[in-house]
Length: 638
Image (cartoon, rainbow, N blue to C red; front, side, top):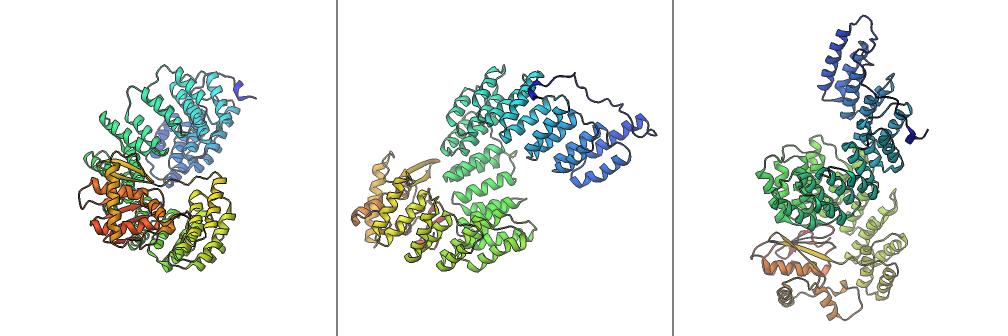
């Protein structure tokens, strides 16, 4: 039969408490008392193992078909992550009703077993059990999560025939379902028909647009909401962060503050995520102080982890360590964030100590943990320890190495100049290398001057098929460094033929709680004249200090003076110059760059830090560089 022609066979009522008693020796009053006792015992369960003896007693006393007890059993088993046990219980029920179906469907949905939930719903329909609004909303959530448009439309049709589609909760779940499936016209029609288009309904529509990257449409709906609550503001901020609109997200947070709307835990984490990606340390510190003033926001795993990530990614690793030490409870995610943060800042020994402390506490590492610790070994040049950690993954913890773990070992071997060993390691891997791994080895060949092996890797990369703009630029850079301008030109031509655009270098710096962005040779900044005057002044001082521009980093066969000019206007230099003219002497300058720092800028920033007496922290695509007294924390390998 077609599900859309489902007939309503009468109003369903909850089974009477006077259901037939399977044990004739037990009176109805005793049965009712036992039911209350079992339901009470089940509600007090905190662990799945506590259910088993209670369930055994239920079976022994002949209450295993009592719908009230069964409902609580199914609900509790699902809640305590034992949905398989709940499914087994359900299969033994003689005549399951709509409430029991709802309990198990809810369990499947909560466990992420959406297909099982949808199948069970249609099994219920085929048995002519009439759905109610609760099971309709549960299965619609499953359909939306699985993007099963056909099944969801059938559920909508059934809800309409049963007169349930006009119910507010059903309507909103239908809007969410259509939105997740990208059927915005259907979602909008339902929204427009609602008599109460309040902030809750609007938030659902906003989320639907943001889930599909339609930021402008989401803002349009958001702006029309007259009275916005914390959930609505948070949905908008979270969606902007997920769509890469970090500056817009922070501006939205400021607007939220102006409206005297108090953020919740989720808002705080979203804002900290935006701060992390932009390197907005001062704003991140303000958010941290806000948490301290408002005690209803706890320093739990969720918030504490976001703070550790923010401070680590914004360059203040000492504060990240302080937060980590303050946390009363830590889980494996918290440890992963701390290890990863220390690795990014070149604090390899500290990262290893944190890892060992985690193991002593009995916390099992994950695949992510090993990416973090192998990165730490790589940044510290700890070859033997890194290889031991790599082998212990599968040997001691049953975690099979993935492409990221293999890549860390190649990076580690390349860092210390074991290029042939890294090349052989790639050939002996159980999985095929990707362009990131090969690019890492190619970069190591360039750094250590092994252009013969570099060309072998370059040929593999060119035949690899899928390479990004960064890999093409690296290839051209290797050829240019060895004076092979024709080969470098061919790489650039291949990029042009494939329509591959070089990602423009962009650097940002936070001054007075505002993020200032600079591109190569940027002339948009209001203080451009002062910035370029400072740049000219620095270039002169650096020249007198003996700095010789690394013109081999420029990918064009042009005169050296032209190459020097091209290097001089790199985005990170402009950002540093703005920092020097806009902050007090002695203030640490923190810059975030979207690409790898070039060789010439790296050597130049070391000199600027020495001459100006400033500490300069630069976060590039791979790691942090702490420049101080003419040195860099990366040891000139990055």
